[in-house]
Image (cartoon, rainbow over all chains, first blue to last red; front, side, top):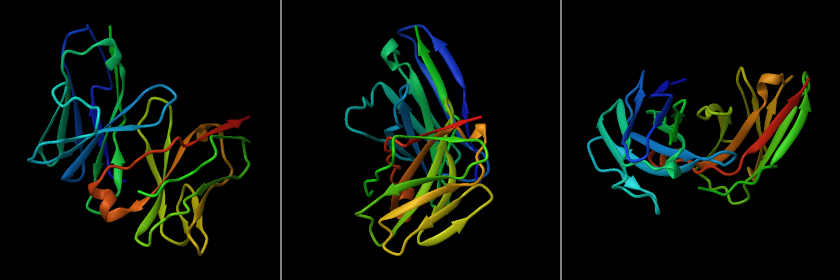
Length: 114
Length: 113
């Protein structure tokens, strides 16, 4: 199947700092990428939909000024958590859509804000 | 996307066949059924997708009855490494490709030695 990578896989930062997470589709072009967040023992919750070359669409309750999304190319989308706080600690997962419409997920990024 | 209902958890032993059933009573004509597997601290992994009857790949089989109001993921001869959460999702793939997949609670499968 198609491969989606994320970097970094794990990050620890101090409260108030910003963290950037990259999502790449390695062997296909993805016009649409999605960002999810998952807390322990819970299911994935959609944060935003990222379309190449346009502004991201955020789900209700997700602050667009806090979670900055950039989808500059067909193979890369970035999520920047600005002024991170301990409550932002979570598992962030991206997914990308292939031409066959199936969505493939990245391995996730574990964020811990101290 | 159509709402799905799955058992919260299931237990099995190594070597057994495991069948996880998902109910989707309001599935639409254009909807496909897709199953994902998720291990702790990893992203969901695509397992199988189908529209009707039976689909089989190297990992699993997917059985879909004629009315398509339910589907069953069948994992043959499970091993300890199959311990994971399994998600059933239903939706129009053309639409779902442009819209995000909505995850339910999934089924937590625990395989014992």
